[in-house]
Image (cartoon, rainbow, N blue to C red; front, side, top):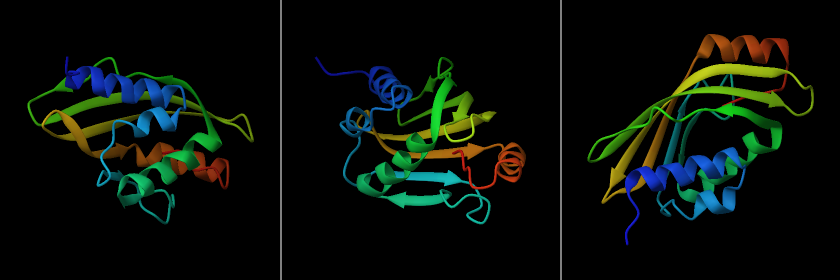
Length: 140
């Protein structure tokens, strides 16, 4: 039986919360595109990554720096070729223990029920405040 979009995205988000990128990678096509709308001068993880390998390399940098305390995707909305969710997040920076709390918006592009692109929008003011207070820490 084929998995539903809700089950696929649910598994992706469960893999992210578990910081298990090998599991997450099983759901992404080789030409996956991941865009984080953050100015690169604020956070070098901003911009587009084309291809599963590039996307996973960036995600690995985030996983290495942060523990995920809260990552709530319970309000996921799904349409035929797209999905969206506003995600309250609470991360803890591993090196300093500093909390980062914010909300981000995730927009998925789907083809034949599978994710091919993820576009993220972040609260730039909160991110700027965190980066300023904790130089070198870059949440995404």
